[in-house]
Amino acid sequence: MLPVRLDRTRPEPLPAQLAAAVRGLVTDGTLSTGDRLPSSRALAADLHVARAVVEQAYDQLLAEAWVETRRGSGTFVASGEVLPVAPAAPRPATRTQRYVRLDAGTPWIDPRHLPGWRRAWREVSVARAPRGYPDALGLPELREALAERLARTRGLSVEPDEILVTAGTTDGLRQLLGVLGTGDVLVEDPGYRAAVETVRAVGRGVVDHPAVAPVTDLTGCVAAYVTPAHQHPLGRVMPAADRLSLLGAARAADAVVLEDDYDSEFRYDVAPVPALAALDRSRVAYLGTAAKSVGPGLRLGWLVAPPELHDRLLRRRVVTHDTPPWPTQRALLTLLRDGWVDRVVRTARRVYASRAPRVAAALGPHAELAGPLAGMYSTWLTRPDAARAARDAARAAGFDLPVLADYCRTARLSGLVVGFGGVTDAELDHALSVLAGSLGRHLGGR
Ligand SMILES: Cc1ncc(COP(=O)(O)O)c(C=O)c1O
Image 1: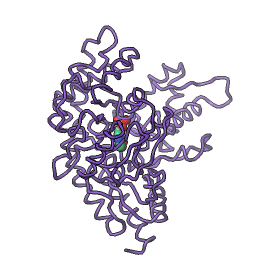
Image 2: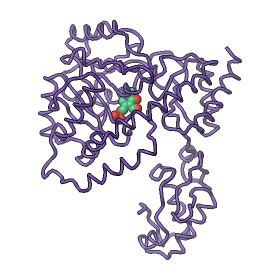
Image 3: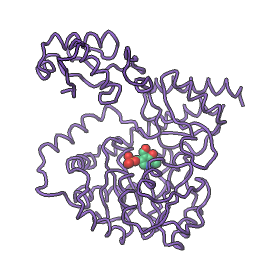
Image 4: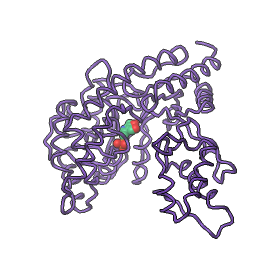
C-alpha cells in the first residue's frame, strides 16, 4: 500500500490530498516510472475512504500525465521521460524535474532475464532461514559460488573462507578502513566519488593522486584506493609497469592496495584484464560488487583481504553482526548457481559492445576519448565550457549526465562521462544527437 495519510480536518478535499500525496511520492523517488499503484478498491479500503475518492484522485493524476492506465492491468506511474511539474508544487522545482540519466554506474539488465530473477526470490521464500545471526563471513554456499566465479573470471584463486560477503564496494571499503592502522588514503583523481566520501566520513585524509600517473611513493598512507582494470572515470587500464610500481610503493610503506574491480568483466573484444590481487595477495585487498552484473540495488559485494586484515575483519564482524541480510545473499546464490549472472553479463556485454561505438561515432568528431572503449560508459575530454553547455542541452532535452569535473578534486580535466547501460537504444540515440549537436555548435568542429 502507499505510505499516504489523509487528514479530514484539512479544508482540502480528500481526492486533492491523495493526488498531491501521490505526486509527492513520485517526485521524491518513492514511486518510480512503471510502478503499479494499488487498485482504487484496495487503496480506498486501506485509507478508509469511499472508492470514489481514490478514483477522482487517479483521474486527476491521469489528466496531468503523472500516471497512465493499461487496459485490464491497472494504473502505473507514467513513463514519460520528463514528468510534469506539479501544479503549485510545494517542493523546489529541481526536485520535480525527472531526467533519463546517462549514468556511468547503471548496468543494462535485459528484461528477458526477469523470470530467472523471480525464480531466485521464490527459492528464497521457501528456504529455511538461519536460526541465529548468519555466518559472519557470509553464507558458506554463496562464498563457494563466489570463489568458483573469481577463479573462472578473474584469475583469483581463493578459498571460500578467504571471502567476506559485503553490502557492496563502499561497504567493503568502510569495513577495511575500520581495521587499518592510522594514516591517510591515496585516491585516484579524478576518481570514484563514493570512495572519497567514505574515506572522509571515517575521518581519514584523502591524498589526491593523478589518475594516470604511476604511484611511486605511499609514505604517510595506510592504503591506496585504485581501479586498475578500468580507471573510474577515465577508463584507462593500469599499465603493467604502473602495477609493479604501485605494489613496490605499498611494500615500502607497509600500506595496502585497495583494488576496486567494479566492471572488469565488461571488456568487449578481449579477455578481462587480470586482477591486481592475483599478483600479490598479501598486499592487495580485492573489492568486487554485484552492482554491475545483478544491479546496484541488490547491495552485495565481496572482499578478499590479505590474511591479517581478513582475520581482523572477521573478529570484528563476529561481534558486530553487520553482515548483509541473509535473504539477499541467498538470492545471489541462486542467481550464480543458475548461471543467471553469467547470462546477464554476456547479454549486457553484447549490448555495450554495440552501444559504445555509437557513442564514439557521435562524440568522436568533437571530443577526445579518454581511455579504451570498455564497460558501460565512456569519458570524453573537451573544453569545460563545451562540456557544461552539452550537459545543459541534454538537461533541456530531459537527460542528465555528469561532467568530468564532477569527479575531479585537484585535477583539472574537463569533459563528459557518458553512461549507456541504464537507457534504451532510442533514448541513447536521442541523447547522443543532442550532445553532438551542442558540442558541434560550441566547438565549431575540430
Ligand atoms: C568505481 C566504482 N566502484 C564501485 C561501484 C559499485 O559500488 P557499490 O558496490 O557500493 O554499489 C561503482 C558503481 O557505480 C563504481 O562506479
